[in-house]
Length: 269
Image (cartoon, rainbow, N blue to C red; front, side, top):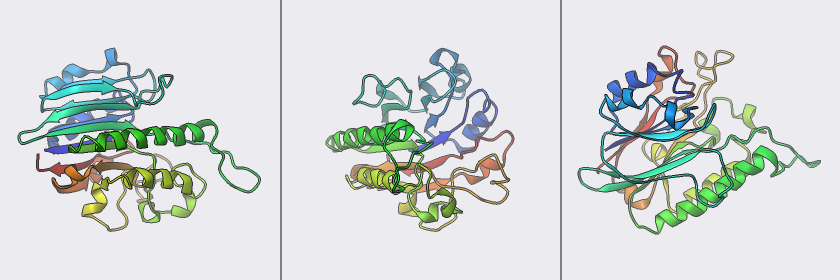
C-alpha cells in the first residue's frame, strides 16, 4: 500500500499538475492539504475517472483537506476532536481497506502559527495564531493517543508546518523566531512522537538536505533553500509494516508546481 501526502496549494491552480503526478506515481491513497475549495466545488469527477474515491473536508478560499483512494474507505470522519467551535477544515480520517490489512489514515493540515508575539524576555506568547497552533497540536496529541489505544496500524499524514531539526532546513538560522521552528513548536511535535509514533521518512533516510517545501520567492527552489515540514507518523503497528519512504522532489520542477512536494510511504498492507 503506497500512502502519500501532498499540500497542493489550491486545487484550481493544480488542476493539471495533480493528475499528472497521480498517473506517474500511482499512490494507492493520498491525503491532500490546502485544497482551498468547498466540497461542492472540488473537481471529484476528474479523480474518479482516474480510479480514485474522493472524500473532502473543504473550506472556501483557504485550508481544506481531502483523501483520494483507489482502495475502499470506511468510517470517514471530519474535523479534529476536542473543540466543537473550531471551524477550520484541517483534519480528515478514514480506514483504508488494503489487500492484507486495514490502516487508519489521518490527513492533517497543521496551523502555521505566524505571526508570533514575544514578551519582554524574548519568549513566544501562546496567543493569537501561535496560541491556536499550540492548542491544535495538544488536541492532536490527545487524539493521537486515543488512536494508539486501538492497537491498529495508524498513519498521521500531512503538512505539519513543523521543521523538526536544524538539518531539516537549508538555513535554520533564518527560522529561529518562526512558528515552524520555535522550541515550543518542536517540543509539541516531539510530544506526539513520544507517544510511540515513528517519523517514517527519517526511519529510512537520515541524510541532510532533504526538503518538502521551497518558497516561490527569492529563487528558493533554484538555490535549494528548502525546509522539510510534510511528515507521516506511524503507530508501532504501522511502523512494523514500513517497507520504504521517500520525497518526490522533482515534482517541484514541473509546470505550475505547488510550493510543496509529495512525501510517501510504502506499507506491507
